[in-house]
Image 1 (tube, rainbow, N blue to C red):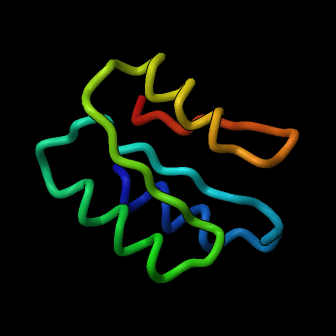
Image 2 (image 1 turned 90 degrees about the horizontal axis):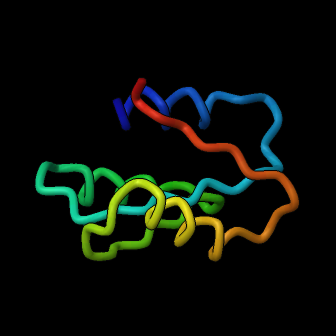
Length: 76
């Protein structure tokens, strides 16, 4: 899911936005994929934290945001 979501965001014609990726203790390859996107794209930031659940991860991401508008992407 992460790969498809990020590819969709990167292909947007409007480019004045930031992407905040919060790794909430993932055990798959998501942390590495997040790091790759952050290295490749200036508007992508990644943060790693211990698993605290969905709400905790979102609140953490919001605390790192610098814009007035916030959107969440979920796999469902």
